[in-house]
Image (cartoon, rainbow, N blue to C red; front, side, top):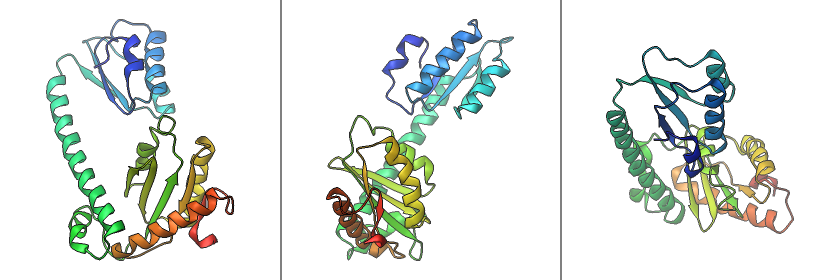
Length: 236
């Protein structure tokens, strides 16, 4: 809940914000409120309006232009029930993400022990005979790249990403190394300290460790100045 514009800087990023105090404010105030939410990385806004109040088309069009999710509710809407349901979904997703990350780690470090990872992969529609690539994102600045994992998850429908010793390990499905290089080049322009090694294309969950080793090797060659950033293993 954010009822006052002064509390927006306390957000960490990606929050879905609930608000019920924009009913009698001017459009300038509302636009300023929304702009501050966007600048602090909020994920969206739900506004509860009293009967007879509305948001102008200018505000709606502005949110569409900024691709900022805006939802309208009424004062009869039970925010408590909505928050409870969202909390259940978030906890379920978090448990699932934790299981998937654990499965990926097992696949990378203990590839011969398929029983430790195959079940969680298959539950989440990760199967053999699908095109997989591991990318190693190194030299990440923790403060600068806080939103990078969620940005990548939004960009790739089917992926897993986790942090390990200030590095990010990214698994993507259905994306070629060449396409990944093109996509991640844009991210490197934004995060200038970031260096990305893109591994080989593999078609078996048991071979993810091979793509991972190749991604790390590529990253080391970028770090030493032999390859430009980002680079694919196929360029070696």
